[in-house]
Length: 402
Ligand code: EZ4
Ligand code: CO
Image (cartoon, rainbow, N blue to C red; front, top):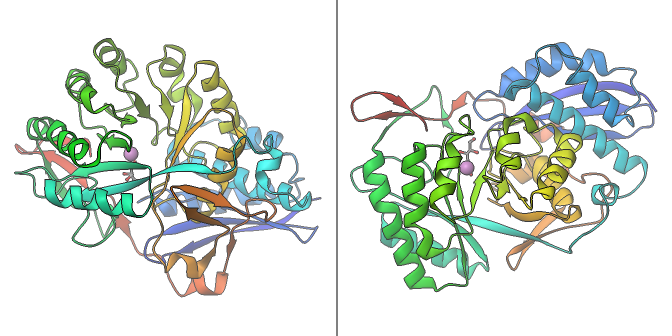
């Protein structure tokens, strides 16, 4: 089998998505997600200018060799843009492999270790009451795990809190919006939120929270410690992930489980975190972490240290990534949980999906490969629109983490 052509499909059904489509001489094509929120066209250009010409003529079944061709074979290794491109290629090739063998992707990864995938939903509110109401809605929808992000008094806009009645979508049209941050207000607010949520919903519901990189190591340690009475499923990105040593301090002070890595893109971003057992869940998604080929290795490595997966699954990752994640989650033994934010309905005009949510879990059908298709004609109805994630400043104007 040979790769005969490949193209990048750019579309914006509600938000931007980049999709790689690889064609073969066997009449089979594969799809890969290449969406990097707010930097989409950088990946599209990298794929179009440097990867697609080198893919033509290669045997798509050689996923291992092709992965290393675009990773090791490129002097400038790692980095979000290049690794998202490598991921898209890898996902599309595994899609082709499954279709060629007429079997769902999970069968190529070891078969099913479980029948369904535990997911967590997002609950948000501008204040405590709205947040509790939203957690209640997720419980009514049968979610067994809920991430809770609440507005903080005195901070006008904050990561994770949706505009009224809408689901949370952080990227905004045009150049980045600016938000104002105050760690002290945040640290005082979060434990109060979890105290009230536990009071309202009891102790069986799994609760999660995303700090979103905005604490220093000692602040993160204080927060993790103060949340212990509410026994979170996990506390996510308590520190900025680029400082791996930062988590040693937190670990000395708290037993709150830690998840990290949605902004990581290779195993080299967290070897210390894994081997020193400073984390409990790895978040690096297939779409940014080198696809199936690399994440199979990372998940196996993490499993030695009893670390589980909890892949990133925000709406800025396309249905192709979500479906591939479900296959992966079904197959590996150290699966923990999957983030699940339903895409807007308009997304499903373009992407034809093969998974469904039922009673707190995601399930996928038996379609071969990844099993998601794209309607290219519909995609053309939704052209690209520049959109960026916000930036964060402290009240005195200092640039901070968002
Ligand atoms: O901010 O996907 O856990 N989920 C997250 C997301 C990220 C966005 C960035 O594109 O942190 O909401
Ligand atoms: Co996150």
